[in-house]
Image (cartoon, rainbow, N blue to C red; front, side, top):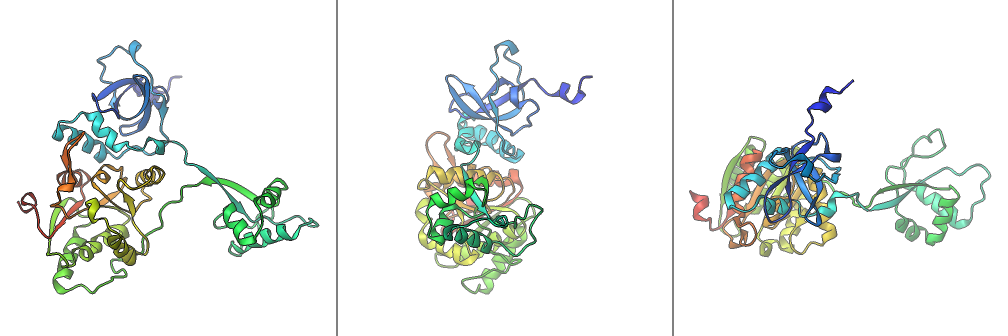
Length: 383
């Protein structure tokens, strides 16, 4: 008997390919049969293999017999609908090819694959009468110390809260990797393969009252209260105007804390020249951990990890240059554009855009507040 649901799934899909030419192309669904709008795929394009975004059913302007098939359905969550709309609107606004904007969003195709794997070692109760060398006993004792006291399972293993890396074991116990390998071969330790990409640590927050580095003045408290109330209440563009040194950063940190406490992600755009060690130190002092960074000095490996964590919702706060605006936030709750008047927010090659204006557009589509902070606001922000 035919499956009615399967019969309604389109056999061909419209895909926006990450190439700086053209826009949407039809592909046979292949492994992407049933994929929803926003799903990520890999497709053949000319002689290359490029990432793309499923935009919906095929347009139908090319005969099915002439279509090539989607190669891979990426095992990641689909892009949120608001981001897909943002891509379409940016392309229309800037008159750039849709593929050029898609390429800015899908800038890290290396993030599509399985993350690098790493062995993690766990304590295992040795069998009665097992002969253990001094080095092996050290490792067993060390792994046991890394676990909270718990009742052994049916196999006699003590569950570990977090596995331990080989590097940590060899350093702590003063043994060689060969000793650990021998224990693994002998079944004296439990080993699991886990992702080597560890998510960023959670920010410290306390229901809107974190570790402030300064005491806010009455005016600052009034502005901070206004921004906190804006979080979670749909789109609103707020101008945070204050002379240099007036505490604008501390004020918008209040909104950051409110958004994170509500389980939302935050994007802070800064000109690269303003993304200084001093700013990072202030953020870390306030929230206990540094933010996820996104700019030209970040290594490809770090960008791969960060892009994936942003899409998975595991990166709480991202601070970066204008390109961070195109990251795939899954639960965006607040956008801040600091030094919004800066010329550095203008992109003048590929898709030409003003990041401040596009931040407001993204805020509208995601229905989140946008804070524009400056000591010398631009005319556009005033009006």
